Image (cartoon, rainbow, N blue to C red; front, top):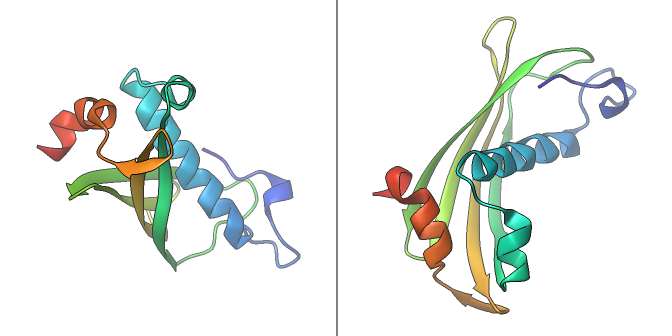
Length: 125
């Protein structure tokens, strides 16, 4: 991905909130690559929601920087835990690190999602 000018603040660096957009987009692309439709699951009453985040800002990204957004996944109980890193492409410098914990709501109630377990099977086994 690439930093767009409107994502930067007066200091010329990416505004902190935009990193959350980057990692959310990465998770959605990951789902899409597995053939999972976030919208379809929602329409069937299955929603993955963020329960907790731990964020570490390391090296700022700047306008026009290209970056690589990576993720790893594990499951603990009913929580899906995404470990996500963003690296500046030009020098592979770590810019941002996040641990994102998601839980599933099944028809509005906290529960285990067979749909997500199936989709993530090769990553969480």
